[in-house]
Image (cartoon, rainbow, N blue to C red; front, top):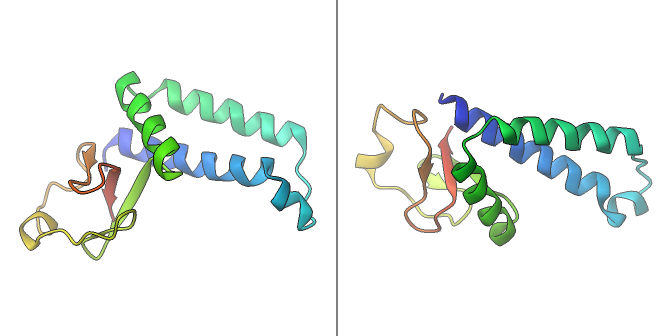
Length: 113
């Protein structure tokens, strides 16, 4: 798998953790989040984001604002963001996850599982 894709997946996971940790709903369920843990996550996020090409991070952030996430897996040839089924020709390629790709329907960054 391409290094940039792996970093984008990690960035997406950290963003999801931060969203939960900072949400009032999360706290109202009885979960406590320590401020130092949130700061550690933010630092990790910054480190990962700085190691990804700037234009890719910019696109990721734009997609995250639009969809709530910047990258989505393709499972069984279906984009899990817009649920479009990829044609067999695309799904059977051998060079999947070797470069940053986008869903032709919704435009989100995709990776194949």
